[in-house]
Image (tube, rainbow, N blue to C red; front, side):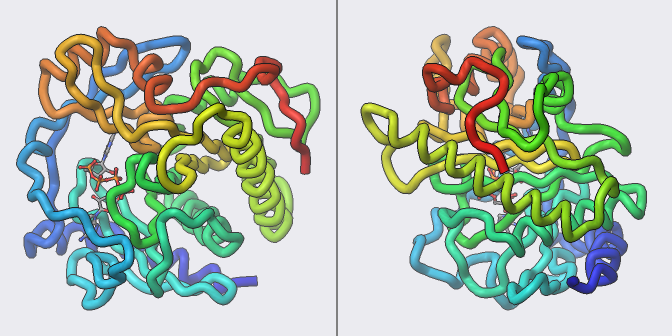
Length: 324
Ligand code: B4P
């Protein structure tokens, strides 16, 4: 059993680190406003963030170079602390380019690739950080952009934690929570979504011993990844590069969404809309009112369909054949 106090310490340091990062200029905050747009039963959060156009352009890191921004020396105001889960060591950093205050990252201490799947320690650390947040009245969900087509830009393995209101959940969870399951312990899909995805319902928070929940979480991830690879194997043409997918973890569900493209080209105006895991959580971001209007006109679900993969034939039923 890992030391849970380290997780509490990290969560209790977030506010202070965030404030000092903003004060010393190492953490850049980009102000935004949010509009809600309902599409196919999802109340999409469409965030307008014009100042993100002024985000400093840094050259894309070389994949084989481990000396990127997530390696030492760590910067005051971004560095929160270290933690250890099983044999894996991590560093917690505030997001340098912050749109939502207290958005933070869990980064492997040694360089590991962002194309690698999540490991049991990654999943345990994520669940334990979210649980520590809940103990302190701070709600987060975790997302992971795996592979370049998933929207990731940094090659050093990092999981991200997005704050949400207490008792809240990302918009996509409304559909996942509504899904009636005939049996527990099986992956399912949400039939109304126009892109391939697999979801697993987790045991309720604190309904079972932590070790048991973490074990189920690991098995669930393996099972969803297996379904993702089965789906990829059935495609006539594989998307370029390493397999890419997004992962979302809430206290209720684990979602895995395979990706076919990093960006969707809007039919009106030809603008490219980049989408990361947050898009599949129901949270899209735009840099101008014009782009926001075009994105809504195109329909958020159509955009997600454009960067995801087609739903596999025979998967229109609510549960799919992979159980743990
Ligand atoms: P990646 O997995 O590589 O990519 P990403 O989240 O899509 O962010 P990206 O870097 O492409 O930024 P973008 O302009 O699209 O994650 C890398 C993470 O590390 C990012 O959070 C990045 O900001 C952060 N980072 C980079 N350099 C760092 C450093 N030196 N120290 C610490 N952290 C560093 O988007 C800009 C921001 O908006 C991102 O934070 C993104 O997550 C966020 N965002 C995107 N969609 C959003 C939405 N719908 N709502 C709220 N925020 C959103």
